[in-house]
Amino acid sequence: MVANRLRGFVRRHPTARKAARRLRAFLAPGLGGTGRPQPPPPPPAPAPAPPPTRTFELALPHHGNTPPGAPATLSFSTPARLWVPRKLQKHGLAGFEPDTLACFLAALEHARPGAVLDIGANVGLYGLLAAAHSPRPVYAFEPTPHVAAAARSLAAANHLPVNVVELALADRTGSAELSLSTKSDASNSLAAGFRPGSDRIQVQADTLTHWCEHTATAPAVVKIDTETTEPDVVAGGLDVLRASRPWILCEVLPGHGVDTRLTELLRPLDYTWHHLNGELPAPAHPAIDGHGAAPHQRMWLFAPHPPTEALWQRAREWRHALRHCTPAGEEAPQSHPHPET
Image 1 (cartoon, rainbow, N blue to C red):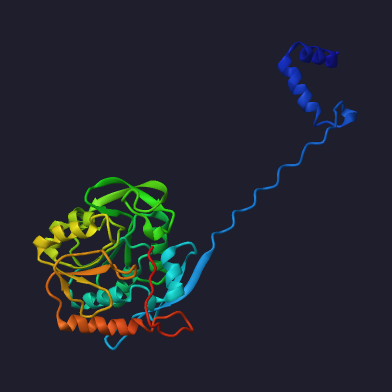
Image 2 (image 1 turned 45 degrees about the vertical axis):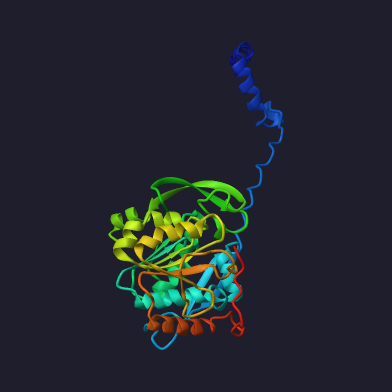
């Protein structure tokens, strides 16, 4: 009787009938079920393959006055697609902006006390060298998130006190759009259309003056390489440059009005301008001119006062030391190719 009442209840209620059908699929035929086998659970999705990694040791320059305890090499382990590590693994420091690196290291020794700012740092090579060869505070500014992460990883792996700041320095404060280049991560820029872009992302921007005031930082040596927005960096830091008068290493690409704007901005500050094109000492120029320079000779030294022979001599010594910073098993190159990014 109870079974008949249950059957009647199930027939009268559609929801109960539906539930009963589902239940029968789990019962053996002897118990009134259909005994239909259940499909096996889907296999777990395979774990994504880790991105390929580039791992190598980068030889560092040394000479008689190298600080005690300075590392002989930097250990690199970065995503394989990053442009700067790829070039460093192939050419070493001997083939990567040797004139600029030599003047940068000489300026570290001759500048007054103060911080080092690597603006447009990419993976932070200049900041790493500064931290390895001087006790100065070092800040590396890189707005591209995955590139900034690689810079932090390199600093930590090499136990070097480089403060990586995920920020774009510009002529304004707030949010900005960063164009990600299809050519290489070294060509990412706030300048829309500078290189063919794969995407644009929102990043935080600040002026050099505001950031220095906020952090109570006085720069003594500054490297700027921001893919045609160098004048914006200078415009946003004029008060700091006027007060601190740091030595500046700056890329000047042809076109885009970069050289004209830099000349107009820096002329009132009484800086001297020296094109780093293989000649040391590099003579002063009446104006900054980015035209006609080879791709690996587009860096300039902006000096707060005329460089002394002592600074040029140190730069020559550093350049000689850099010639020996080749990949393992290679001899010093006769020239220093550095293809355009």
